[in-house]
Length: 89
Image (tube, rainbow, N blue to C red; front, side):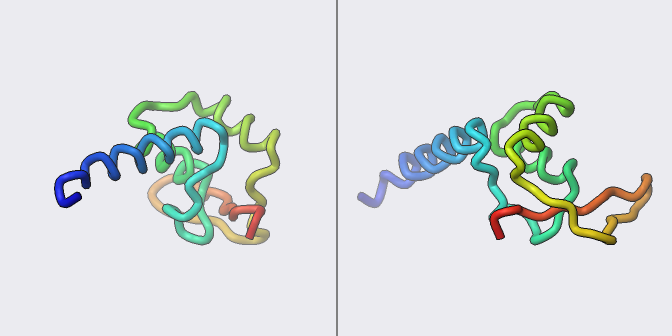
């Protein structure tokens, strides 16, 4: 059993990737509030490939998975981004 850790990790990665493809998003890897870009970047990092931005956001909107955090924006070097949270919490 000491040498099967790689199998456990591989199974966890495969399961998480399948969940993301089925839009069971990895909210536990994100802060409580996040931008759409942060959510997409997290999913891309786990999947190991880029996602088409428009399709990704349309699928999330269609499933009503996230909600706007009223009055909260994340500012930085670029224009402010609206913050969202998991609708299930």
